[in-house]
Amino acid sequence: MTKRRPVVGVPACIKPIGAHDFHVVGRKYVDAVLAAGCTPVLLPALGERQDVAQLIDMLDGVMFTGSPSMVEPARYGQQPAYPDMHLDKERDATTFPLIAAALDAGLPLMAICRGFQELNVALGGTLFQAVQDVPGRIDHREPKDKSLDVQYGPAHPVNLTAGGKLQAILGGVSQIQVNSIHSQGIDALAPALTAEAVAPDGQIEAVWVTGAKSFALAVQWHPEWKVMDNPDSVKIFTAFGDACRVRQAT
Image 1: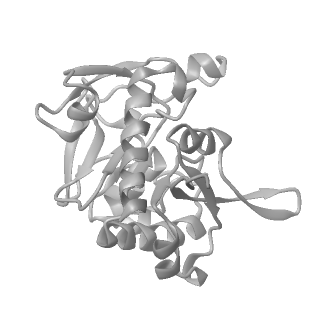
Image 2: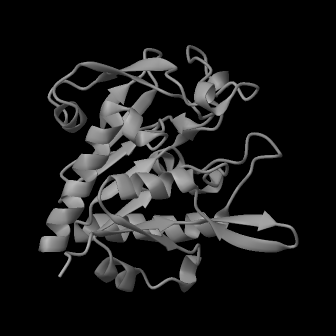
């Protein structure tokens, strides 16, 4: 009998297509979960209608993805800084309880871009709504007039925290190159998080949940993009997959 692969839940976003709303997840995230040796299961954005306890029982890990939408500013005590901000309240209502339940249960957790921001806000932190407008910060947005390979290409280095979890995953290096495709970012770091990587301008780019029971990493960049072509991304997703396999075995 073939041993089943660990099951990783991937929360969806709500996206209008034509006259109807759809639950959607970017293909690159699904492919990255497969690259980690796990089976992705897409979780609809049901908000309060979801059975969080049942999901935790079903899953061996969870990955919170990037998205065109932003975390609702009201969740960190602010009003939207600009009127056309793309929000997805149903995703927020789905992911925030799931983050809390996953951490409480010791479920391996990986978060990327919006997911990175969700984790910080869920644990009591705040966000810059437009990093490019913050004095001393660079513009972390992608060049949208360029090809996807350029948009997702190396944009700047990040310095890894000495002795940190991410540095250990990446083999002890002190710096790596990452892509940069975001306008929002961490302002006040949540008390329960430890910074694991910082951009040269001081912007926090990776965090770990301090004292987490299992793998609990979040990154601002996009390691899921053509994951198998980037040795650093392979190491990150392999570590996540290994944690999911440990969870499955126990």
